[in-house]
Length: 185
Image (cartoon, rainbow, N blue to C red):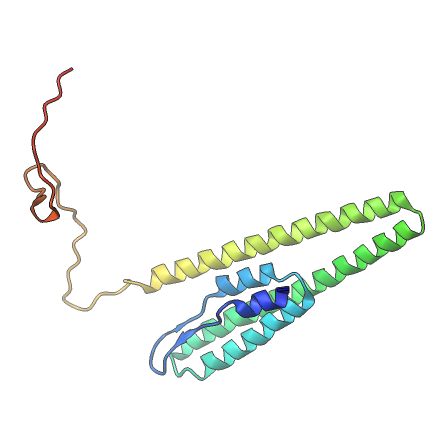
């Protein structure tokens, strides 16, 4: 049987960090794994993996600004993991209270508690989904800013597209035979 801890461990934990290269750390990937973790043990395992990842990044020898940014992301994810542990504990306590109320014959109270647990779990899940989207969009913006933002001196960039006309389109190398077809209505 595969437990949720095993699922987290099966995912590859990789950070690209060469001695003189860039540090690339995907916070969105870890946020997704955090969202998938349903037990406190899985969340704790994820936090330990983040600690290892932070150590790798510190030892990478990359630019200090990149290292600091990656460590900020790791710190953010660890805060979210701590929040999730608190919420999971709260859900667990409310489930236990619901079970006790049911055992004591207080069906009405048990029903209310179950409904409340269900609503809190729904809001927790939607909040986690929002966190994933937020971090993914932030990473996308960072990539867009870093990629192609500066060009070497003397390099001209043309943004004009060539106009496509039937005369300048060639199918010679593609192995497509061209013939004209007249369609009459």
